[in-house]
Amino acid sequence: MDMGERKGLSRRRFVGGLAGMAAVVALPAPAAPPSHGAPSDRTPPNRTPPDRAPAPDARTAAPRKDSGPRPLYIGTYTSVQGGGTGIGLATYDPTTGRITGSGTLTGVPDPSYLAVHPDGRTLYAVDERQDGAVTAVRLADRRVLGSRGTGGAGPCHLSVHPTGRWLLSADYQSGSVAVHPIDAQGALGERTALVTHSSPAPGPGQQGPHAHQFITSPDGGHVLAVDLGTDTVYTYRLDLSKGTLTEVAQAHTRPGAGPRHLTFHPGGRYAYLANEVDDTVAVCAYDPASGRLTIGTPQSTGSAGGTNYPAQFLVTANSAYAFLANRGHNSLARYAVEADGARLRLLGTVPVAGDFPRQIAFSPDGALLFAANQRSGTVSVFHVDAQSGELRLAGKPFASPMAVCALPL
Image (tube, rainbow, N blue to C red):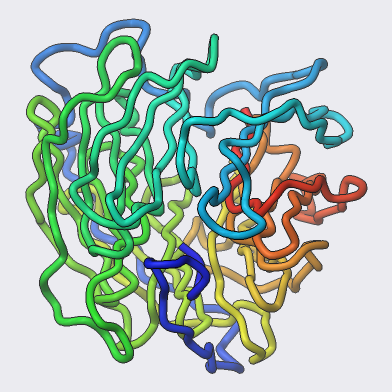
């Protein structure tokens, strides 16, 4: 959710002020997972149907060689001046990166964040409003399959569990996370879990909890919620047969960091945390057996101490590089990933060719990086050099009203 730009869902403005952080921070390796493998409740009693199988692992799946246009979906706000009228529909050329608009999918209010089911057949969107909801859309005919209330206010993030059976969502305004079942057609059932973050107390300058992200760990054994308001990353065990949540661990940043977004290294033992409020990032060690996250020392976003709100990390499938979206500095920070994921080394920044890059995403083959620039209402596309980590702008950014999320398929 953006800083203070939503009516009824405003956020305090913060001034990121930490400069001169060390460019290299390393963490000790977390404890090795037990030899017997993953926790027992990773496998549900009812086996996943073949057509709802988990998504391929990015480290082992062969890159898709696309020759024709590919679909691109763009999230926006519909209830603010200058916003869109629904989910933006477009295609992109996987070779050149050129985007071509193809209309709008209406009927979904304030679809500010989007995710797709692992089988590629259903799109999910948050309805970022006071009475929060999540909506499912069948992509074959773009039919809205219905919405379900999250039980909270201002949902700003969602993700699909790798089994394809559960939708995880984070409510920024109410500081809560929710779980909804997904049926065989991709439609959503009634909410099975709702947890509001009540402990620890809100961080400096915060009035309450603000859940900003809810994702599944690479091992599939835990789900993690990042809360900006409480300076905490919560780890839960998701019961894969009931869809209920049990908290198993908390990881705390330093007070006032305002953690926003966590991205795992493909190896599953480390993750990278973007701290929105104090303009820093941190390397985190992750123990798959316990779900415990250990947050490392803050380091630079490359913003040189100016007003900046880091938004989101991406890590290349070959584990060699990481990219960070910087809102304010309006750049993409480039990091070399070293020591099997335990260290990030800042290489520099690249102008994003837009204003306020809210969200970034790779194309499925990792050859393109898309940046949704909220204030300029554009989507920038970059060619990604997998060997050098260099980014090259792929032509003029695509105009889209208040683009806050770009989802290339």
